[in-house]
Image (cartoon, rainbow, N blue to C red):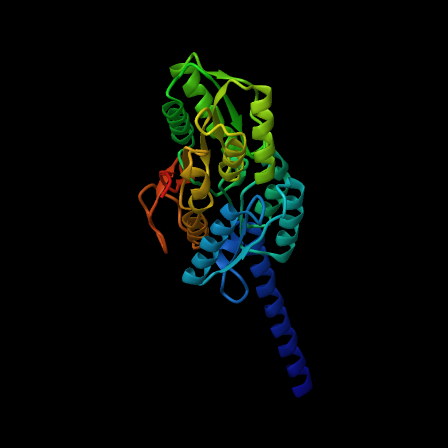
Length: 338
């Protein structure tokens, strides 16, 4: 009797255990935000922050900000990206992070369209998705971290280029990073629209020239532009390598007094070209803050918070939110020679 009773108790215990396990897996499958509710196995969130590429000062600085936020907030931040501005490499890396079961992926896409399938896969796996620096498919992201108001920034750069040229009746050129970068394209579109409306005598000599985020390409492209269009009086540089790259080219051509350059730039990277007017003005925001804010918003979403304009985010403070998911870092600074 004792053996029979013991066997019955074991069966009951095993059955109860299986039922509890089944309920647990069923609840997780039913909720797309299960990872957000549970976090990592050890109670610490793992947040991936992926730049367009590594190895350039801009994304080194954003990485420092993201890493510091992880330390301050007690979350595990993985800051990693391709060594070149390659969307295919980003897709492969995100596939690996999906397999690893991370809690959030924050990506700055080189090509938004190329990200769609893999971000949908990540979202279906219950991973929180953010884009930052440049936009992905808005239907797939839980939040979009904008470094600036895109329209205001593009208009500002155009206004300042005309100011430094001293005329709104001239030829100008645009040199950019990657042709598929949504943020750069948004600034360019805003700058062109503003020029068409307010400076009808400005002539854009050609479609924007890409540099693939490389300073040496910005340098050689600027020289090629000036040889092809010697009457160009102004250049707009979109992406941080254009500040030093285009500026050095203008200096080497001896055109500091003939060609005005307004470009995105890291302040410390362009003091030399600012000093003699090879670059008239650098425009950018605080890159460390961009990385820091991205991690703060990701953790807030993982904690189950809903984004609202004026809300307080742990580690950051009050945030500006547009259209429920677009978080705006803030205005850019204009850099002159120190």
